Image 1 (tube, one colour):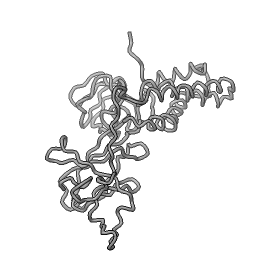
Image 2 (cartoon, helix red, strand yellow):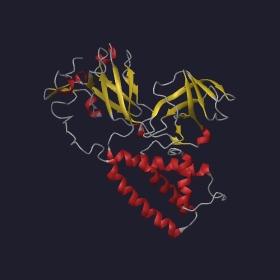
Image 3 (cartoon, one colour):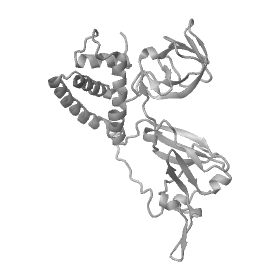
Length: 323
């Protein structure tokens, strides 16, 4: 018995069933429906999952501090170029000594000094955000950096692609991956993402470099292969995936949203109105499933940003870090 098909092929079939769309029609081709799904991922699914703030899609990226540099680019894959948390890693024991690095308001980073407010930007500890990067304080982190910055961010689900534009792994031999398909336009200039073939469909590696392709043997050689790579995983061009990188229970909702777009385009009024009602009920039900993720525990509230966590480098609060 075949396993569950999580790919865009299955979602295309689901969309057609919802609107009784025959294969022999010219209004919407598979590429159109996949593009619709990409639009709905960005405009409907991602905001919905982000709104519940239950740590879906949270990834880590560690960046070495560089001498003389106080600006560091926010990971480009983040939802709305946003951040979940920024910390400092002590290189002596990075896994056990992760230190709070608080967000500062722009007003905090302007030096002021008078007899009523003896306050200077030199005492700041933390970072503020400017466009696509963060600016770090204090200067000691920049003059003699020994540690790393850890970015936690919500990695945005990749845009959906057809299975014909991806390659599923059937065997692994070192850096050589045997696949079921090699897209014709792939070359050694192509970078790919490695997508987990089962829930939660997370990326096991982004922007992997291809060093060789053998279309006859159906093999792809990578410069490096993540240790977690497994048969059944998928390779696809960077920032794409043949599987929606969302909770599996949201697949029907995504298909219903696209079906509604199609029915609106066909001026199929009554089915469209019914579909909108169905989508609203599905959204309501999904919100109950999406939160809380841990139904057996109560979340602890910590007063970050309080009086003793004011982003001042005084040896207490956020500044009591030993730097």
